[in-house]
Image 1 (cartoon, rainbow, N blue to C red):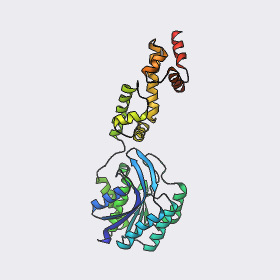
Image 2 (cartoon, rainbow, N blue to C red; image 1 turned 90 degrees about the vertical axis):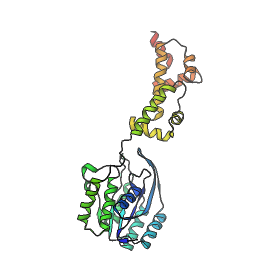
Image 3 (cartoon, rainbow, N blue to C red; image 1 turned 90 degrees about the horizontal axis):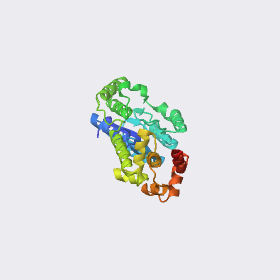
Image 4 (cartoon, rainbow, N blue to C red; image 1 turned 135 degrees about the vertical axis):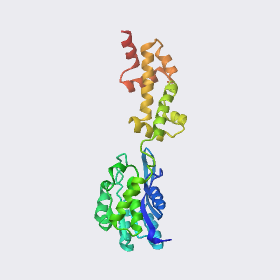
Length: 301
């Protein structure tokens, strides 16, 4: 293997492939480099956001990095997501020990949806210990405004790493990385048509089944997704939980039956799947702040 074109990327994993180590490897390989990697964090995520982090222990990160540095001796190291101070300390120690020619740090501090990914004390450690050892620290301003999209900071820094590994100066590598990114395919966008379609199907299912079912798990099963994913979709599109949307629709149905007909509350309760009239009354009062009997009384007066 030609260690002149071998690049080590140290960052988190993104299961969607839109950023993280997956995007780095794809970009470097497409350009003709040899990508190697060490993972700092495993994320549970999809195109709607990150649900969970599993940060790897510093000892595990150390073993990954040393295995590559001892054997393949990459002269360019690209660093992304760091969420633990002890991991920062390990990377600083190894950079000082193995002295790669270039160290690129592309800060990953927030998700594309504004979620804080790195605690302030961790970034403080990065500023104090790691940044002084870096060839360059990439910021959003390094990217042309027209291409500042999800994963593009990863692509840009990975491309920069490739061109530096080929012996280019920093200015030349920056120029070529910008050109590469401007020509690169867009990849997936943050707006998910799948989410919009699923949301509309969810509303349709509520219309069909609200007379019998009020639990999120039922609707998630009907749509072939997990309740957790359904919650991500509704919060992304409507900023509301699936349960809140279901409850609102059921409450509207109760109100309609109370104000446009003369069915006894007991019959309404049974028709809508409540175990008793008392159950319906408690539910309705919790949702609307008023008892159903008061609604009906107001209609009669």
